[in-house]
Image (cartoon, rainbow, N blue to C red):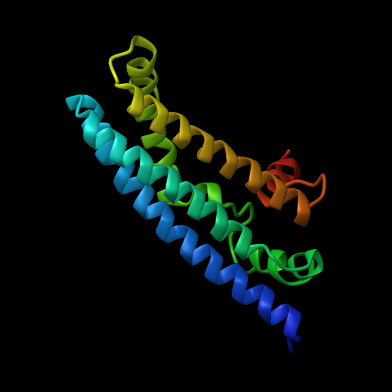
Length: 169
């Protein structure tokens, strides 16, 4: 298959954007694990620094996702999505099964309750509460951008994982 310039650019952006996103994800996990420890120790100076860094990492991850998806929808439908289906990958392929993504979700759960409790009870200083708010805002912005990207490429459609489960029923 010979790719035109638009298709080559799409593949390049898709791959590079995802590689950069994965680097951000790895750093997020490192910082979330450190935040969990700092929360346990009530080390508020470290908590604030980690929350500020995590907010920037989420912002950067959002930018890398946008970069990875900045190409016409037709290149996704005709070129990239088929590469994420059998025989190239297992049926029901999804980034949700990425080990680092699963670790991030687990770590987020571990820090969410103690962080919210420290903010609610006033245990954490105001600058930590403000940093936590910025962190949660960037995380929400990241999820919202991901939904927009999904809608761009599969308008009203199902993910490959959803299609797999529907076909299995």
